[in-house]
Image 1 (cartoon, protein in one colour):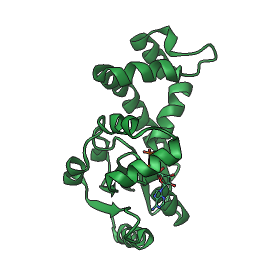
Image 2: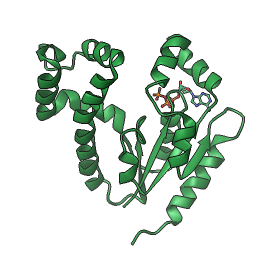
Image 3: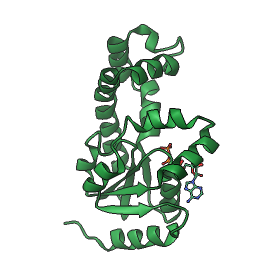
Image 4: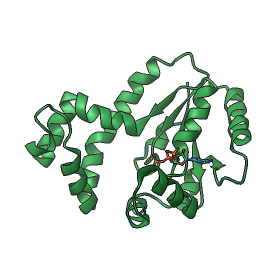
Amino acid sequence: MLKVGITGGIGSGKTTICKVFEILGIPVFYADEIAKEIMNTDKNLRLKIKKAFGDQSYLGNEQLNRKYIADLVFADKTELEKLNRLVHPAVFHAFDDWLITHQNAPYVLKEAALLYESQSYKMCNYSILVKSPLEIKIKRLVQRDHITADDIKLRMDKQFTDEQKEKLADFVLVNDEKQLLIPQVLDLHQHFLSIKLF
Ligand code: ATP
């Protein structure tokens, strides 16, 4: 099974691009969505998070106390790393399970904001970086999330820069609202369809 990782900075448009691949019939594993989900549903993970961050990490209904955890990890890089060390292996495991149910697909995509930072690109055959200019990413996120440019920059500081990511990427999609996006996606799609793994 050919596995392709796809990533990009916040607001780069990676989810939008994944939707295009889905229209082409390619299954997409949305790692960040799955991470949010399993922090609520995976009992072992819940126990580990409570042990690491205290019982107040969860609300009475066993739903993650997002505000409490977000305040902790945004304020302290070591806390963020601690959380990632618990969550990332659980997501890798969920991806392996998901793959079993998509064996008939010509290839699959794994969308993850921290594909390179989490090292999960190493479990993919190829990786795609979605690139957009900073001012466009800020414009999109202000519109989508109603947050300030300062908040966006704080979030961006937690990720590798595009230059760091580009060194690790096999393919780059440019989503700058100037170059046509769909032909870039179609070219890559044809390329992946032509690859035979033995
Ligand atoms: P995040 O990591 O923050 O979730 P993302 O990289 O997945 O972001 P998207 O959610 O796909 O980015 O896109 C961010 C916003 O920009 C969305 O509202 C999306 O509709 C818009 N957007 C993305 N690409 C384009 C484009 N080429 N033209 C117009 N709007 C776009």
